[in-house]
Amino acid sequence: MKLHITQTSPYARIARAAIIEHGLDDRIEVVTARTREPGSPYYEITPSGRVPFLERDDGPGLEETDLICAYLDGMSDRAPLLRRQEEADWQAGRLHALARSFLDGLAVWVREMRRPENERSPTIIAHETARADRMLHLWEKEIGTPLMQQGLTVTHLTLYCALDAARQLIGPGAMASRPALAAWHARLGERPSLVATRPPRRS
Image 1 (cartoon, helix red, strand yellow):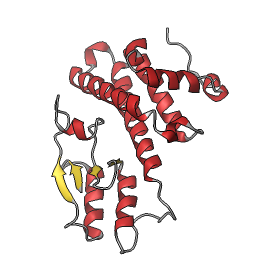
Image 2: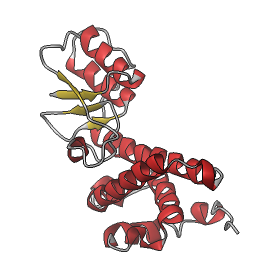
Image 3: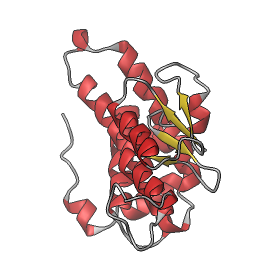
């Protein structure tokens, strides 16, 4: 396995410390990721480009520090660093982390666009634009996952709100070439809770 990190990230530091605490140094390679670089090969591993990211050898990778630490707890016989669940649902956690990461990046973009035009950072906007495109591409594939096609969870609500933010920033074309994602968004948007909480149109 590989844990992708940056040396300055406090979130990655937590995961690195957890590996050491659990004595898993010989099982997990720590790799420095190239983040915030256009076209970085790291984006092929995780389209969000965030750290830490645990590249597993037994399933899809995991993003978000707490989720990774919970997984490391399950790999070790030592005392858990998080409360141990009877049966960890890594697939649900993985999808929720992807939805949160998508929304977090869009929130940065929204905040930047609300600044006066002469104070906006072209570098930040370009970075978040590219990240959003990668995440939309990823979710066009992931939306077919059974967990995203049944029931309703916070993950569904998080992704829906992220897609609304993406449409606000990019326009209707955000999902023009993502028919599965567009159909899912339209279907979920009919729920009374999402109709009632629809934000007012900005003038």
